[in-house]
Image 1 (cartoon, one colour):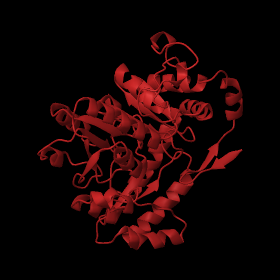
Image 2: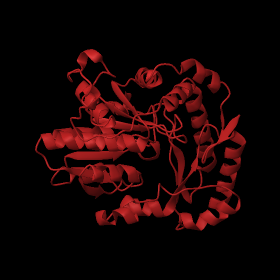
Image 3: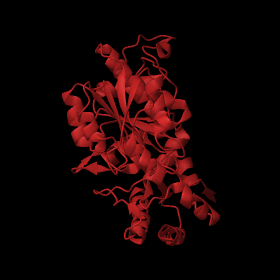
Length: 380
């Protein structure tokens, strides 16, 4: 049987039933196995699987807030104009006061120049590799750490991305991934918090498990909670219940076995769209990031005075779905207008830019059709 999901093609499920029957066993078997396989595949030190990328952002924000408070620093954070709403919400819910920074010129990510010019660096920099395109992560992390700030990376729209031959999750302090189905790797709902140290791993794992002190699910020998009937009901911090389910972890493992093919197919679709549209003078498209990582989607900016609203009805009439840059500038959303800031680069990009999908399940003939119709409507 095949299943359809928004923004994707039909999902082949043949073989998953047998895999599920084979792999479902004792509690946390698939959660632990998925964590281990992710670490091995992507060279990650520590992984806490959770039930969504949004939950991963919330866990990371709460964990960093605890670390900042322990250092006696103010709960301040900087975000980019293009930041997914649940990342903004996570930081606000964790108690941070937010400053919104404009994007780099002709790009989707936080402006390194604007960060350099800040008089006071916030306690946390929350950077987003928006749509799967890397920000200037090395320079930003060097600047942040030199000024005593933590770096939270929202990498929910990329997986396997490298900068200077180094995985992006090896930069910064905490990194989040999403396994939402239209993203690179699906667990049909899920996410993860990545860390470099055992200390941060234990902190984020505790936050994701009710704030409990018990570590028996990690290593019984390392658990210091006194034995007895209340052993698992000792809570040492504010926490959540956002553990990934066994079923989601099992599906994620099954998908991970196909990772090379998934990434190959995504890159083919991105390249087809790029080759079709890159010579048009009235629009801008972006080369795929280097170092063998596909973007999340294919963005297109109109550069001839039109806006995305000019082209939207024409494409909709042909049943071609386009989307805005995740709703545009985050502080222009009704929920976040109190964060308003002058953001000329981001607002211009939001007004003129849209994206189409490159999911590996989209039939190639459909992508070819979309590319041809995009070219026609952009050129005319």
